[in-house]
Each structure stands twice: as structure tokens, then as C-alpha cells.
Length: 157
Image (cartoon, rainbow, N blue to C red; front, side, top):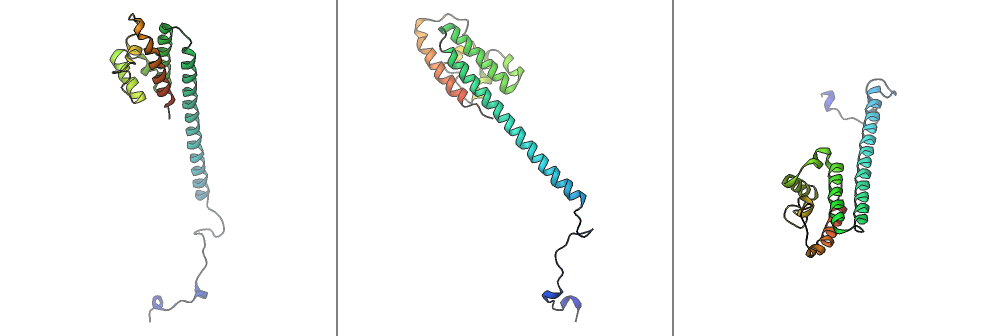
């Protein structure tokens, strides 16, 4: 009979043990656990910081949009356009806020996942700031305020 085929009783089994030095935790294991914990902590801190930064940007933008409602219609449009530049700069960097015309409208549409700035009433904030407006555009201010508030409230991470 082969020794590997012999029946083994529970009394003959050896207890669990660590390889290598018995009873001592190896340095590599401690280093791996510490490094994993440190990496998880760092990822958590970065995500928290980015979340607060975006939430602060959203709150500040909505607060500034509310303050612009008290302005005259022409000044309100300028304040809203300036706000959009600052939001784009805060979300995507300085290069995003330097675009003009169709490129700026496309960037805003992509940033807010809409076509409000290239095909909707938001076109006035992209290229219509220097045109004279008729009195019929009084409804435009309310539409712009409502849509900008909705878009700015959706700013995430």
C-alpha cells in the first residue's frame, strides 16, 4: 500500500500555520496591507475633494444667477454670459473659456448635455450679446433664467 493512499485520521493533521518564520508576520505582508490602506484613503480623499469643489461651483453659480435676476435685461445677459465662462473655466480649465462663436456654443452644449446654446434661446448668450434687442425679447430673460438654473443645478462630478 502506498503511503499517499493510506487513510489519515484527524489526529494526524497539522494545524494552520504561516509559511517561513513561524509566528512572525513577514514585512512584505505588513507593507502590502499598509500600502493598500493608504491607497484607499488617498482615493477617498481625492473623490471627496473633487465632490466638494464641484458642489461649491454649482452653489456659487446658482447664487450668482439669482443675483443677476435683479439686473436690467442687457446687464443680465452680460452677467449670465460671464457666469457661463467662469463655470466652463472651473469645470474644464482656461482653454475651455477662451473659445468663441460656434465652438463656444458646441462646448456649452457638450458641457451641459443639451442643444440649448447652438439651436435654442441660449444662442443669445453665445453670439447675440452685441445685437440690439426689441421689447419682444422680454420673455427671453425668463426663459434663459429658468433654463440656466436647470442646467447649472445639474453640474456634477
